Image 1 (tube, rainbow, N blue to C red):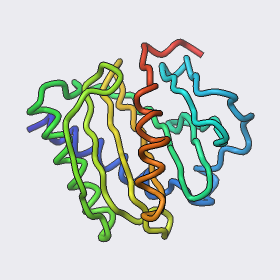
Image 2: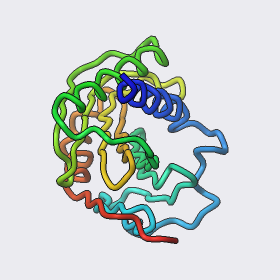
Image 3: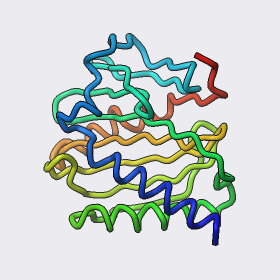
Image 4: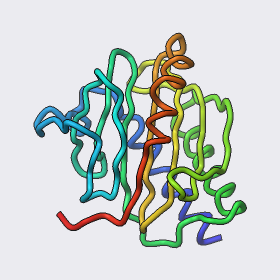
Length: 187
């Protein structure tokens, strides 16, 4: 029960942060920091190949980076976790259920498309595809939660419904396949 509560708290924190993605609030602005030419963040233990022609900006705090073009965004988050991370299929399903519950509670427009416990970058993960509202805009989202090296790494990839299928195939899924996760280096 304690572990499930832990997952629910994680899901609630992530859902709250997701609401700010794509908004103009200072917490999500990344312009104050220099752009990152690539997708390598060794101090966070995260590396990926960004899509050609997309802007890549270093984030602040838990937001590692944003990758954007037009109405499409990939937000890369890293949240340190002190509790045991889910690894078994049952634990990943419990984490998924907690994430879905938090998303529904946070956004009345949330509509699940597909979910799956999976493995990303060789690490246990939960992937959720859904329709939701982000910063007042209807979006289709692929949210991937990876549990590794004492952290929950979240890759939120979203776009408008008309563009999602193509951007998902051409950008979001290849970026996830390129993802490398390692022990974070001290900054």
